[in-house]
Image 1 (cartoon, helix red, strand yellow):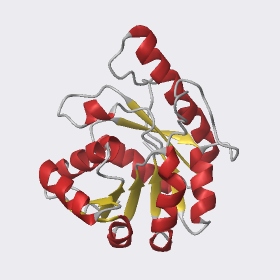
Image 2 (cartoon, rainbow, N blue to C red):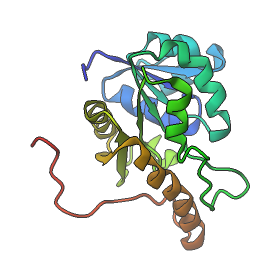
Image 3 (cartoon, rainbow, N blue to C red):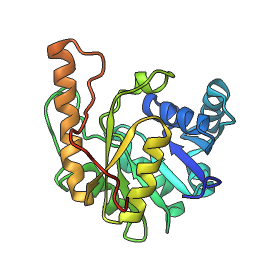
Image 4 (cartoon, rainbow, N blue to C red):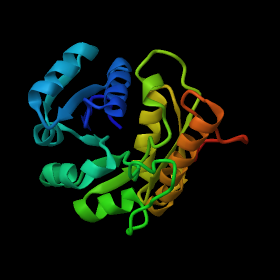
Length: 219
């Protein structure tokens, strides 16, 4: 991806969105925080610094080359409907995990099979949908500490996956190709497992690490 490309983080005033926006901006990327309220987006951008700017969700998506959607499952459909007119021929990265309170420690995938496949159905086939950042502890990512966590990246377009793997690396994580978009169900389900493990073992933000000597595709 061109380093001059503009990235919009929709839901960028939330915990994961703000953490991703901050780290991407700190790495030198041009980043816009999107929110339902432009004022809230602008305020968060000022607080985070690193040259971040803020707009409402639709304007942020319109101005971006790559769009990251970081909203709760309950807000996924409405948020995607808001930005859909501005997503054509762009990469949209969906981070949504289908957590249904209060049973967030129990896997509850939607009828479509995964939140990512659901997002693709809302946005249409002219949008390149990639799924990632499901198992990252946002409260750690918002700091400057090292976050020892892998990010599994799913999508039917290998080149688009590679763009998001690069973004994961840029925020200090390790991005790994996880295969087709349908495979996102595995990572989405795993988030409920990690939440359960956090509680059971009193862990402060469990993540995942894939073992083995992994060499980047094409290396």
